[in-house]
Amino acid sequence: MLKRIALFTTLFILMTMHTAFASGYGYKSGEQKIYGVVEQIPQDGYGHWIIDGHPVLVTERTKIENEYGRIAVGSYVEVEGVVDNQGFRAYEIEGKAKNDSKRNEYGNKYRQTRGSDREEYGSNYAEGNEFYGVVEQIPTGGLGTWRISGREVFVDRSTRIKSEHGPITVGAKVEVSGAKLADNGAFYAHEIETE
Image (cartoon, rainbow, N blue to C red):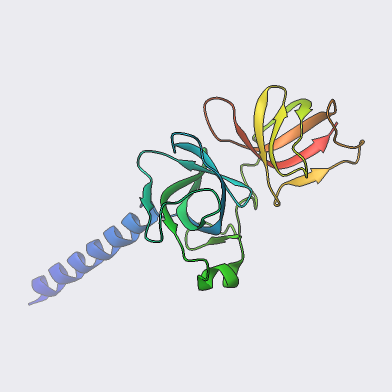
């Protein structure tokens, strides 16, 4: 009888440990969700989409759900994905009705669903990943794709702009902190500061 109790106890502990271990290393461990309006889609549909000013990497593995019609620029969507060394990588994009309740509840912000303690995309994001360069192009209004020393740099509402050493204009020398999004050098800016 004692052997059976010991065996069941051991099995129970092993099963519990396996479940705890597996849940920490699953694909969705740092899952994030975005609710927002699609602003830009690459011509072939793959690459970096811009959703409410935020770059979102879409690959062949990203599941696209078109329940409310084909997703296009102007569509309201829910995006599920993970933040990793490539930035925000989507594994599912779902078109939503224009009156979706999450739109009113969350606005167009990123929200954490589980995983790290990040409250929104950009909080304590990719620290130590930076480069220096000269601003070559800034879009009207400041949000969107900047060009800094030949690199595409995505700037959104969560990007901190520090101009203590002078205004950030074309020709300004800057330090950019954030995360590399693609092998071509595209970058998501967490902070841009004049030098």
